Image 1 (cartoon, one colour):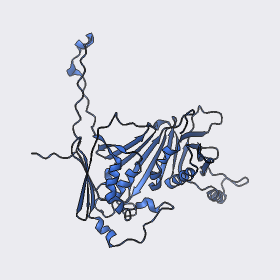
Image 2: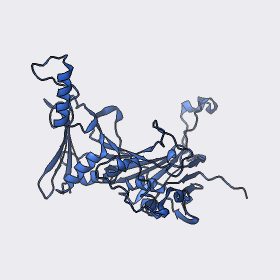
Image 3: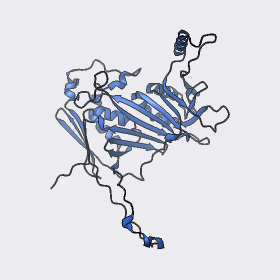
Length: 392
């Protein structure tokens, strides 16, 4: 019997990073999985109002093999009476187009996958915290509990292999640690009714803010103390507060967190010469002390149809829905906050990690000569609340 190459096989020496990325979207029990030549795409959604996307790039694995299967046959055409014009057409003259690539898609239990990766993944956390944890204020650093059993040399014997043989077969996960092998097979299901994707109009973005993810995480944590039902995002390019988050509708008092944004156009004190570099530098230093910048990018372009003086963007969302991105906020380095004119909110988190710890071969070098961290992205999208919609 001839052996058939599996559709997909990937090997990782850092199961902890895979667990961390998938845990960011672990608010739903099931996930839709799509295998592609560039990586694995995981998608979850809840009540068609919040969606989480995590892409495991092929760079996260020490080896990645994808053999796309042939596309399924199209359904047979329905018989219909030909029209008079159809008798004059020759089917051989119709243009042919290249078939679009077919990438397998199925559903699995995300809860079971996370529990499987936790068998070995959590043990890696003390040695593979990566660059994201060390650069955030308030992060927990590995303590002095390292021993001979947690050295990088022993981590060389750890691996996590993902395998998908044929369409409809289980997703096999093999965890190997110092000669002990654990094999888990997760049942795969056909997607029901197709994947639900919350559309973000990339050509109609009216707000784009890039900042440290820790700032957003701290703000959401503070607002959560008042148990709000609604999160309001307010942004303006000309009026203070330039960027603010407010919680309302809870059983306690309302609260808000305002972010200071440095003016891009330096202002000179009255009476000072415009070409005086010393005064200009002093003005910048003073503003840096009084209003430190927390954003790297701050672009706000309200709709031209807004009311008079409508230079401010205001949009409401369910607070509990946005809270589902808290895990991603806690582990990410940066976050890109985008909103389109329909009110759809996108939170895209950039997560860096040294997944090549203990696996120097094949790793890319940074400009400083060390191992370059691998950058991963987790994206959340939220549907806005309507003016007359009540939050339960």
